[in-house]
Amino acid sequence: MILNQVEFAMMNNPVRAWIQRNVEATRMLRMGGAIRGGQALEIGCGRGIGVEIILDKFAAGAVDAFDLDGRMVALASRRLKNREQVRLWVGDCTAIPVKDATYDAVFNFGIIHHVPDWRAALREVARVLKPGGRFYAEEVLDRFITHPMARQFLDHPQSDRFGARAFQRGMQEFGLELNGAETLGEVFAWFLAVKP
Image (cartoon, rainbow, N blue to C red; front, side):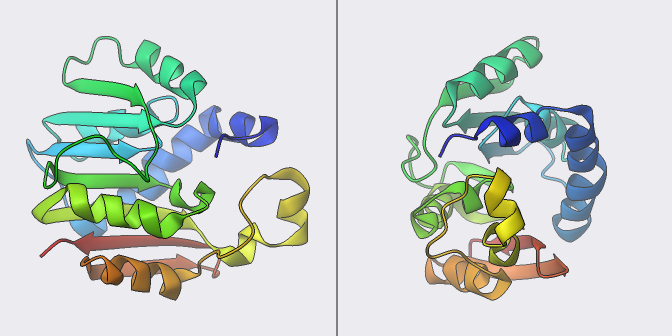
């Protein structure tokens, strides 16, 4: 789903970029390590901060990235115009237009909770990962999404939402092995899974 005005503003500001670089990415890097020279995919690329992080902090050799919102892809295109190892498109994480076993790593900086059929997104992540590939995920959990205050301002799907355990079960259902999980107040969670 496309972000509403409040969410768009929340995702496109220096505070969010700082958190993504210095909190989320640092935690993910500690959990799963770099992917030196690997081919990576970011689902829901927003304005391109995640792509920069994947290239600079995780040492990817190339990054493909997409977002459902064309406005975000346009912002990312401007931000990343000098990065030749980046390919961007408008797309849906429940139908990723690439061959099976394409990527060494897939990154999810808080996107899947926006997807009504979040299991379809996990199925696609598992499909496009190479054997031995890593899935780095940061997610917002059901306790936050369904809270009345969050519902006042944010536009998230409300049915069939996941907590940390349900997300872990979803990954395992599609053949991903959990290598690490951390939560913050049952509201946010970070996961590292590997495709055997």
